[in-house]
Each structure stands twice: as structure tokens, then as C-alpha cells.
Length: 152
Image (cartoon, rainbow, N blue to C red):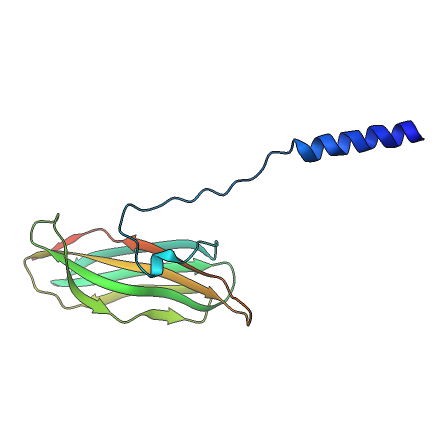
């Protein structure tokens, strides 16, 4: 009986000492960090998208932010429309109010913005989620930049 216990203890200690550790890997954007980009990624946001298109000489924004559970706040923050004359050099054109809801998802479809014709436009924002809870709820922010579109 003692020999079996010793062998079992040896096997368990070998397994514990030689297990492969799981190491989280964080990818970083080359952009200059902002106040919102310092929020630690915690996996609250499971899917997100951002795109723009031109309809009737206007900028149309579509965005989605999804989570697995109901959030205290989920949606878009720090929304900036950028303008360019050449499609390479961008400057801020307009800022939109944060768009946050209490839900498992935030969907924005066909949000139209009047812009000056003859320029390229794109949208930058942070997809944001903050979980419910009284004590230290986790939050996540993921920066995103849309495609660009020329408005004629």
C-alpha cells in the first residue's frame, strides 16, 4: 500500500511540475495610446465591426459590438469622423456622442451623417463593454478604424 501511495504521489508531482503553462498574449496597435486604450482586455467583447459607405452623397456608418452576456454598458465610445483630401493624410472632421446601451449587443445600422462632398471619410472609435456588478466590474475597450470612402 505504501509503495502504491509513493508512486501515485510521484506521478502527481511530475504532472504538476511539468504541466504546460497557459500564457496570455496581447497584441498591441502601433498607434499612440489614449486614455481609453489603457483599459485591459478581458474578453467581454466577442465580436465587433465598423464600416462606412456612401449613399446619396452622405456618409453612412454601420457598427456592431457583441458580448456573451448582458452588459451594464456596451457600444461605441470616442467616435470620430475623419476627413482626407488624398486618402492618406487624415484630420478629425466631427465627433459623435458615445452610443452605449444596457444589453448583450449594440448594433448601429445606416447611421447617416451629412459631410462635405469631394473628400474621403472614415470613422475611428472604441468598441466598449462594461459588465454589471457592484464590486470592480471588468471593462474592455477595442480601438477600430473603418474603411474609407470618397463622397462625391
